Length: 152
Image (cartoon, rainbow, N blue to C red; front, side, top):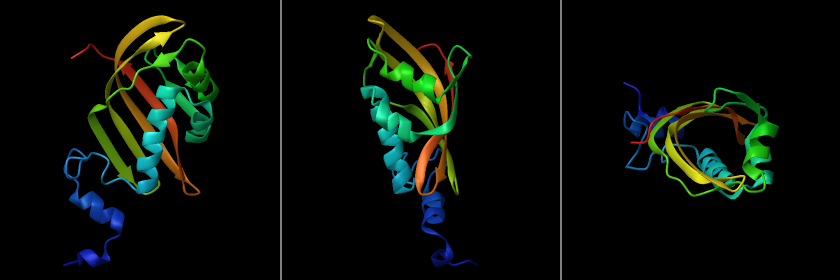
């Protein structure tokens, strides 16, 4: 029988996580601290239109398959979230799905986004999946897929 002392801290955290990726009610508790911070910073950057943070958190080869089934790159994403007249209200990720492996992760869930675009209000319900990669100690999003779904 293997001793738990032989397992890495990450393996222990994952072993303690429940089947839905949560540990102790906090779905991010099993994440490495650097990834947990990056995920929070990514959400904050989207809400506040922080182009500098988005440039840091999105990989150079980032790809988005958006909710209209169009392919966008890093520059497109940053342009959309920092455009004059674009404002996003704070949101809560629901039904989170978290998968973690050495050097990578998928952070997914459902979200209702509300705000304004070109001064016009919008509200959309999405399921999304962000694929994260760790490189040189920094976590970045390399791929996102977003699908429109009806409101709950």
